[in-house]
Image (tube, rainbow, N blue to C red):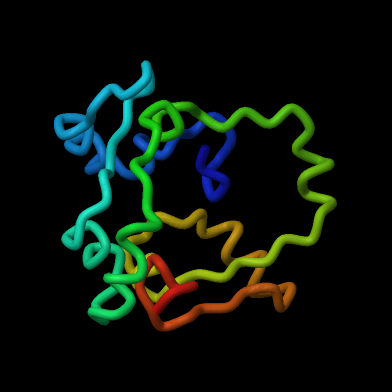
Length: 125
């Protein structure tokens, strides 16, 4: 599920380029999996240091396809809005224009927005 999107929107709707990943998917134990770990995938997400790549690869797992196509359905949006929300966003992802700009603006106005100059996996890079 994709939390930085309007209710009812899936990751595939936000990132249609992910559709091509399904071609390389596999069904394992009845679960359709995509985005199998590889050095190319890690580099795509912004990790370039050889030691970080070596550390990451054995820890990664493929991604269940259904989580990419399942829309987020919230039954109590006011309750969710009552929880203070922080946005920690990588510069790279901001440049892609995939984030909900209303949520970004609200977080900035409330002092709950941090942009970090890194790729997608900012917790590693």
